[in-house]
Image (cartoon, rainbow, N blue to C red; front, side, top):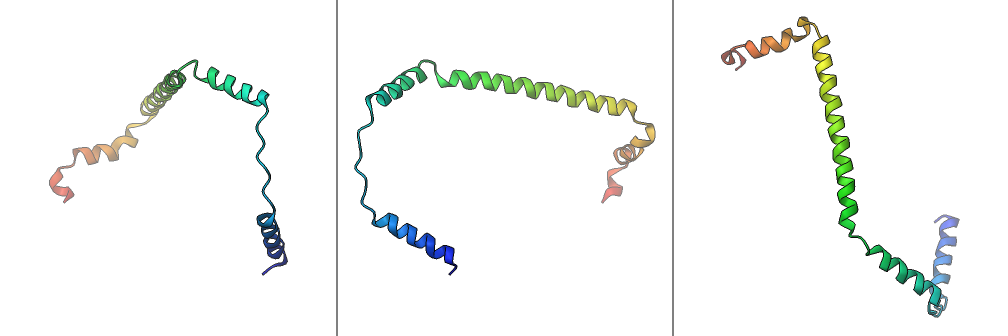
Length: 99
């Protein structure tokens, strides 16, 4: 084993042999803050926030779809008939020759 492994092993053994610390009660100010946060977090339903995020996401997806369709239309309009000849050949080819 490496020397660092021995150091880690000794540290872990020392930590396991150490006496446990007594659990102290939390201060009352901490209790008050936790309770206040808990009460305020339940003021609005969490699904309401998720619904707003879903709407925002759907808007972005719609915009992305429109941009993609627009880019595809522009590419089709800018293409030459020669670029489509292979696709047209495959579409117009009789199915019996493909077997």
